[in-house]
Length: 266
Image (cartoon, rainbow, N blue to C red):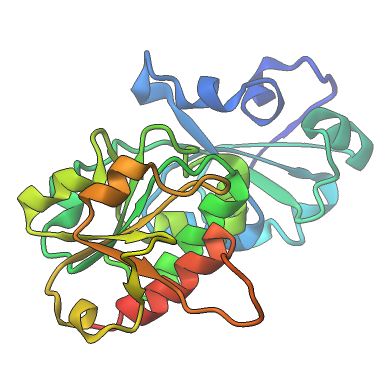
């Protein structure tokens, strides 16, 4: 084990864990140096199992032979930065209750065409900026049968630290890609688009015609305003989730789980 004791909050070697913003970690100018910060042994194990490359680890001293031991043992000779509980809490801004953080190389993402090859059901995340919702959508997508996830460029980065944590590592399991255009572009790949929206022309989510479609792209909109009207107008189907007690809508993460359960069974 390559254990390195940290004694200063200004040590540049641990900057990925405390000093770099999400944009700096993403490093558009030098993609080969871009990083993801992953938290908790369980999520780190999922990432390692999916083939992600670890660069360094940060954990409390007491976790080296405890919660982090198996992770450290499986990461080869990468640096393991450690220190006391108070120092690391000051460094990261919170107590490492889960014991360990891991900086990993951000992989080059596939194209839309690549992740959609052979896919029958995909999710399109359109303009969702809340990292918690992004993580929850990915977790539902993995659990409930989505073949891929496409993310519009005005959405939160799925590799955001909080999104990764909320997804419990599902962001490493479901193929995903940035969608530079709009959902209607998927027609060229043979998909019919399903806009999840409250509209007069909407049909119930359990309509048989939806289950009969060979390829569906399920489009989820922003937390507040929902989908842009032009995306609703361009959709092949506008779909609603029937609700009781006068409730008119669900949080986008909850709605996605319902949609994936109903439409992902193919």
